[in-house]
Length: 187
Length: 129
Image (tube, rainbow over all chains, first blue to last red; front, side, top):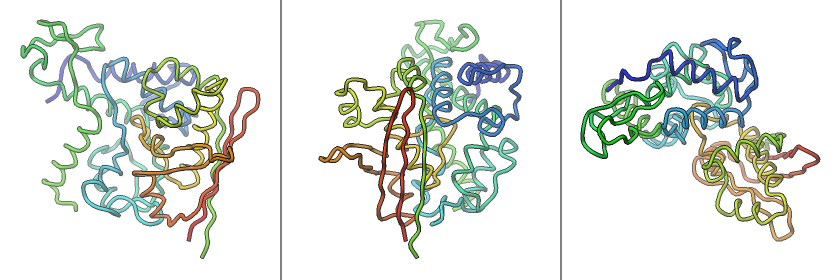
């Protein structure tokens, strides 16, 4: 399901804030299309810092495993990456379904290590929104459906005051891969 | 035909220290239990955490794996850097990192770590078929 408590604009602003604080750059210089590596100069340690900031801001757990690893786990060795560390046609089809226009430079045969440069502010925003949209119908602590927003960043149960427990990033990817495979029969 | 792959990385120790101190799960997400034991037994753990982080990153660069970007990449945990009895660091890989190394037919790897002032640096050389 989707949720209506935290808007895409709010998530986008929070992602920009996390990036600006991590990289010590002006928030206004960041656009939706900015590549974190190519345009903003982020390195792997910065990515970790940004992801941790977003986890703390929204009370979510981002994925711990690369989607390409999940694809190989579910559809077998060689389904996502070939012997030369290049991304397969089928994996690209899947990633295009998932990221859509957020990954316009994605192409079959590209090296795995080219993927991080494709991550933009918009794709990171989408990643956070996907997790927030896993908001369960009812509170897992008290069973009531009285969600409310706190500081426009956290979702809390109006009945027992517990924060919402979202599906983690890895489980969301796995559920999504299962659904797409059933619908599209890519593998 | 033999192929040689190389990766190098430099880490700002103060920056890593700031991130570790701010995020409770960073150390357990990125470093294995044995790495944590080793680093925390040293006089200044952050120098050793930084050297290990640089070694993990160097391995990823040499192998050409990239990292996920959206999320906290578990690949860091799967590349373990521990001292051999001689004191020289060694890489131990498992999981997805091991699978990717097998795909590239890597049969040998070496790692070297150094640090000075506020920086730690590491270099990894992989030899494959």
